Amino acid sequence: MAAPALFDLDGRVALVTGASSGIGREIARALAEAGAAVVLVARRAAGLQEARAEIEAGGGRACALPADLADRASLRAAAARSRESFGDPDILVNAAGVNLRGPMLEIGDEAWDATIAINLSAPFFLAQALAPAMVARGWGRIINIASLQSLRAFPMSAPYGASKGGVMQLTRAQAEALGRDGVTANAIAPGFFPTALTAPVASDPARWEKMAQSTFAKRNGELRDLRGTAVFLASRASDYVTGQTIFVDGGFSAG
Image 1 (spheres, rainbow, N blue to C red):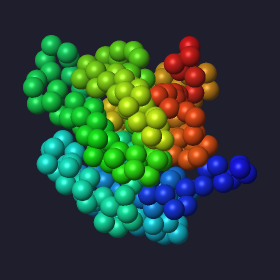
Image 2 (tube, rainbow, N blue to C red):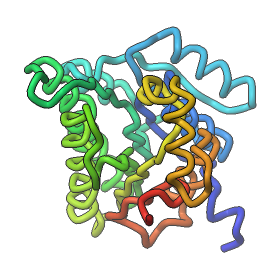
Image 3 (tube, helix red, strand yellow):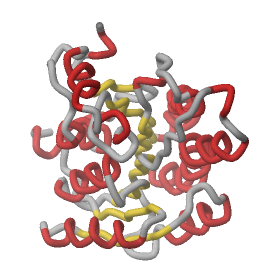
Image 4 (cartoon, rainbow, N blue to C red):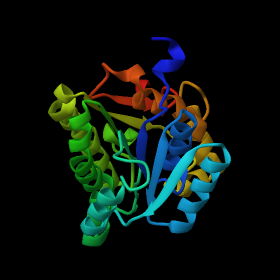
């Protein structure tokens, strides 16, 4: 198979959560540019419409599907409606996430429950809803968004770290359960990228530069740095890769 064909997503349908901004929006654009029709899912309808307009302006196909993934009924309704525009999704990208920071001993029920619901429960239940159609076709891709905190603790982020540790293990469990049916499950663990979740740190130039200097690349990530890994994991190029978490972090986790 020629190299371009390995990465061609023409005829595929991808559902991307967290697609109204940040990492989810960037990955949605990358998959659309590779040929996939993209179902954009997030709470913020305005952001989804902006993302859809960007994709369509570039010649891609997309539809917006607002949903509150912390609410189980809303999540399941979105999964049920996800096939209406382009057919059953072949690719699921779980990029929606929250990081409700605070001292561990002061984290309340609401912050803990919201973090686990969006970061860990949503990837589980969306995959549970969408994987049967992938299994029936004998091909599918699940791409979760893990974190540096899947492996190490950062200050003021206990619920987030716990959820992202769970995402790494969930990815392995999904790979084990679905691999024999042609469905792969992998995760991308971004390093330091400018997103809404990292804004409290990125807004401090000294801290942001210190983080850059802690990488081998001596810079923090740009959202475009995630595109290649996302397309690789969504395409035929990764047919024999499953259960893995790929760290896109400029070498930080290898130090």
